[in-house]
Length: 268
Ligand SMILES: [Zn+2]
Ligand SMILES: [Zn+2]
Image (cartoon, rainbow, N blue to C red; front, side, top):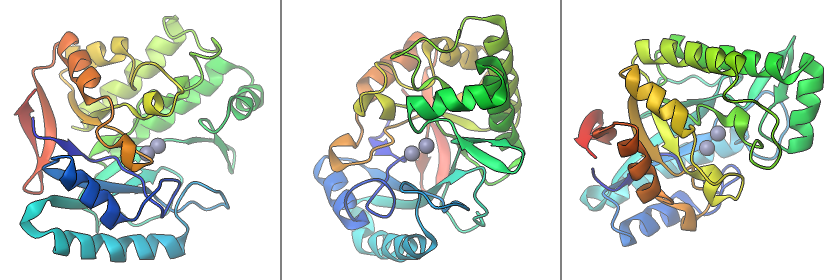
């Protein structure tokens, strides 16, 4: 595999550094290519996604960095698209589709903000099983979006599970809901990221998705890539060795990477 990171945040959302600073750091660390994936603007005020103003500035700097890095580093301008965003998706080099909310009627409810919010969301939906079901139902809908290339942090609903056992991930309801979404996404040809972001930020000791789900994905004939979900320069390519070992242990011999503008299989 080539050294590439496609899930990176910057000063335009809740990450750090300009896109040029990120590209320079990537080049210094020997990456072959880098992809920016700012959080798409959301229809409500928040402190983590790009506003429309910062989105336009992000696109402008992204285009400049692509041009100025020339042959030294391949730079891709992507987006981490949240399903509740109404951003038009045709102009990106690639799209990571992510679910950070489930809808309660017309109201988006965040599922990965804080443990307290998560517990509140469980109460709103009746119980944790119902929230899990609504979450995976929403994740499965990414299959219908032709612009989505990569499924972001497939099981982020378990973000707080290591701190407090909230979801029985071996239970029948969880397994059925997660498998059903996975099946749809595999059938639609989506690539799943093995994402180390929650490890680097101290929420989890293992990347998303869980080992059980990565093994299931392999059985279903799914495809994987490896990303960091970096929110700072230190996070670039964080935990890639651990992710590679995990992918191999689950049976994968190749991963999918963006090379010459196309996703291609590369030996792991
Ligand atoms: Zn995300
Ligand atoms: Zn992200």
